[in-house]
Amino acid sequence: MMRIKTMTIKLKLVLLFFGFFCVPFLVLGKFWYDRSMETIEDNAINNSQQLMRQMNYNLDVYFSDIKKATLPLLTQPLVQQFVKINPSQQYDYYDLSSRIQADLIPNTVYNRDDIYGLSIISLKGPYYSNIAFSDRVAMYRKELSENNKDNFRILGISKTVDGTEVITVFRRIIDNVTYVTAGYLIIDLSLNRTTNIINQAQLGKTGIISIVNTDDRYLYHPDSDRRQQLLPELYKSRFKDMNSPYFTNGSGAGKTIVAYNRSASTGLTIVSEVPLRELMEDLIYFRNLTLGFVLLLIALAFVTILSFSLSITRALSHLMNLMKKVEMGDLSIRAPLRKDEIGSLNRGFNLMLEDLNRLIDMIHISHLKEKEMAIHQRESKLQMLQARINPHFLYNTLGVINAYGIIAKVKPISQMTVWLSDLFRYSIDNPEDTVSLAEEIQHMFNYIHIQKERYQSLEVDVDLDFDRLKDIHTLRLTVQPIVENAFIHGYENYLIKPEYIGLRASFDDSGVKLLIIDRGKGMPPELVETYNHAFSFMTEEQMLQESAPFGGIGMWNVHSRLRLEFGEPYGLSIVSSASSGTVVEIRMPYRKEQSVC
Image 1 (cartoon, rainbow, N blue to C red):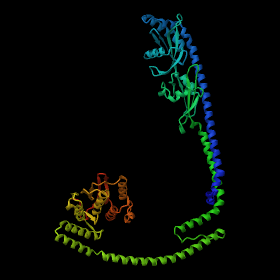
Image 2 (cartoon, rainbow, N blue to C red; image 1 turned 180 degrees about the horizontal axis):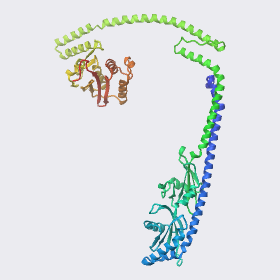
Image 3 (cartoon, one colour; image 1 turned 180 degrees about the vertical axis):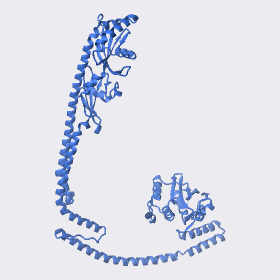
Image 4 (cartoon, rainbow, N blue to C red; image 1 turned 90 degrees about the vertical axis):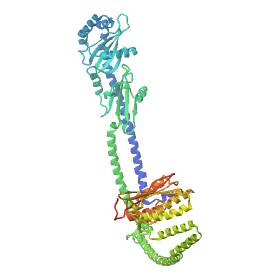
């Protein structure tokens, strides 16, 4: 409740508009759309089921007609004689075949345009066919011997020698004397009559109708490659439930309604598959049209209702925005003058800003005086510190220490004093002065010598061409901070005695790549990635800052100085870093008057 009270007037009006107008309307529209979808789906299923029943009835009528037309052939004398003939009686075999071809075939096959061929298979071995199909005899014998319970069965679609697709059915021939099975009558039916029955129905633009045989294979499918193929497992399991002769396949835009009907007479199952999106095209069109009209009405109502509130809240919002700018420090703004209650608020706001500006000016002058005094104090302290740390005083002191070391014949003290003196003298010079890389390396050796005195086991591996290093341009204090970084972060932070420092140099057209190698513990991969990303994509503004974006300032200082002085691609990059050590690369250019040898 407290949250509602703290809302702006504009937000409250918007919430009221959407809560009492838009949301109920959208919920009602959603309910109407869902119910329409369910109704369309139910109607599509009912229509498909009715169509499948009608098509199955037509097929039953057609195959019943085939049964009646071929029934006399089962008792026809020539057929009865053929199935009883002994295979060794070659003359009788050819005589009967000729008589069947001359008398039986014209009256049966040529009088019907849907019977393509007629064949007789005797269980004793002989066979006859008015079309060439000898390669199918063995297959039919095996098929019929394994499924010999039916008197009439549709075997499926096959191709004749000339490539014509036919529906093959068989009828059992009973011996009229012994009343046992003597052979089979094979009838090849033209596919046209069946396709004509199927094509009488139209299921949308892409809907298909197929026929499934009793062995769960496609007897007919618009896609000829799928004929005689097994049904998908989903279809086979659903076809077993005849109490619910439909189901949906797929989801979303690819959802399909599958309806089926099985004939009790032939055992054939008619299957229709209709994409749901085709059934919904008109509904979706009217839904979009209605939705557009509703959205237009909502927009007009929204503009009309809010126009009044905006006239009030706009001035308040403007004043609130001015206050936010004042909070951000802009005191030069002024609210517009009006002749109403809001105008009185604006005048009070402007007077408040004028008073604030006057007080700020007074405070600013006071702060300036305090800062001037603080600056004078800091300058005095700095002069005192500079007087205490006089370079000449330090040089003289180091010289005295060196003299004592020589007198006492303690060579390490003398050497370390000299190295420290040279190191200090080199460091206090202007760090932005350019020097040769050979000179910078020589300065770095002063630091290395001191470290070798601390760590006697330290191995220094140097592979450098000092003559070529004299041609390389760099800044003071470029190499020594990176080497010192290796001692501190590679060894000392892990409480490991430094054991190895290596320097390698390779030259190319742009200058030199100096590699500094240690065998410390290395850095985590994410830190290496952070360093290299910062080195590659640092901006000039970041280079001028004293702090580094990743924490430490040593490597960042060296890289930013090189990049500002020489530009890309010069600077630092971390070549590799792992538990076995770290390799840092420094790229530096040739002197301008030099070229690559």
